[in-house]
Length: 266
Ligand SMILES: CC(=O)N[C@H]1[C@@H](OP(=O)(O)OP(=O)(O)OC[C@H]2O[C@@H](n3ccc(=O)[nH]c3=O)[C@H](O)[C@@H]2O)O[C@H](CO)[C@H](O)[C@@H]1O
Ligand SMILES: [Mn+2]
Image (cartoon, rainbow, N blue to C red; front, top):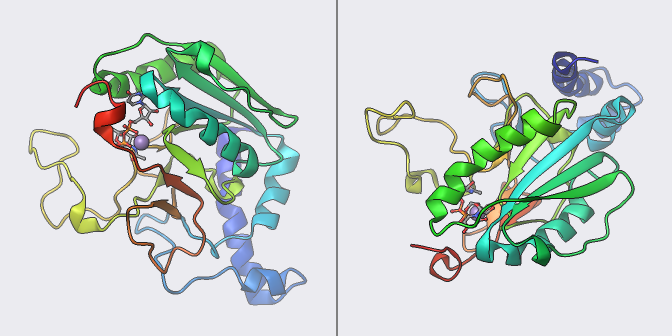
């Protein structure tokens, strides 16, 4: 099955859910619950915004499982950020694409310090050695280049690739509801506090008052897609922020850290 067909299937599955609820089929009772009126559940360009309660996980898994899809994760743990890796991997084992083929690629300069985490059948970890750096900006900027290389070398047949921050941990299901051509995670902070790009010379420039969603720097990236997300995930948190009532289930969180302690430079 081609990638495009899969994407269509993902969207189809959502509309199927809606149809079931209208027609009151045997799936009806469950599907009827799949509805939220208190949040925006579709973007103006018709990408689903995935809140808890807007999808039926059993139905979605039953569509994706027979397709035997493969999911890759890239995560960088350079320098002191290696300290976050154990928690990241352990919580991913509990919540991230359970029952699917998952291949985690860890990029690190401290290969000897990669923790041994027992992984379930169908899941594996590969460590890629990268040089250390004295500047976090360089570590951050080089990530895309190294991911691109990985795709060219090893990921031709991988269906979906998620690029995640290592200083994150999973608390709740993150699975097939997040599959799409280009997926972004909505940042849980207040919109007024976001550092939008204000330099007019930048292609990402937004005038004050413009802009709809603000995405986390992490998310999912796939080759040959445009820059408007086909799917937006909600349900993240940074524990120093006040929990918002519309977030029913925390799926993942960013670990609160003191940048001065862990980044090689400030
Ligand atoms: C969730 C989210 O919105 N994250 C973004 C935000 O994260 P943060 O402000 O949380 O940045 P960060 O310090 O977590 O750095 C991003 C990632 O780079 C890696 N790293 C960084 C420094 C280092 O010394 N060693 C190392 O391995 C590590 O995987 C880390 O998770 O801003 C960054 C750029 O500043 C990136 O855009 C991140 O994706
Ligand atoms: Mn981070």
